Length: 106
Image (cartoon, one colour):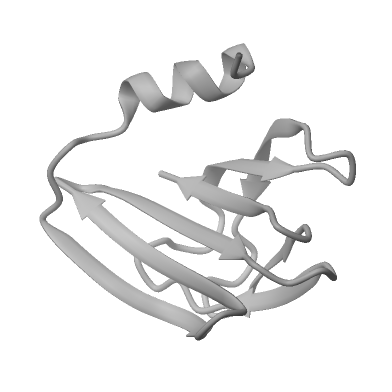
């Protein structure tokens, strides 16, 4: 069974998208996409590697000072939900755990 956090998130995800943007990635290693539904953006990343991956993402759809919901895996692969304040939209720092992922939503 999936954790309640994951189930609650999946209930709110749209089934159609107005825009999809490739942000970063390398075949077989990792991928980061941004998807927009209306005025709401979802930034998703997956890491297919066996080591944690630190990335600095350029997310111009958000402004300095905004707070986004940050879904991530902890080191034990348990889903977590944190609030992330955008300090610099051109350099949003995230860590993707091995065989894990992230989601940023605003």
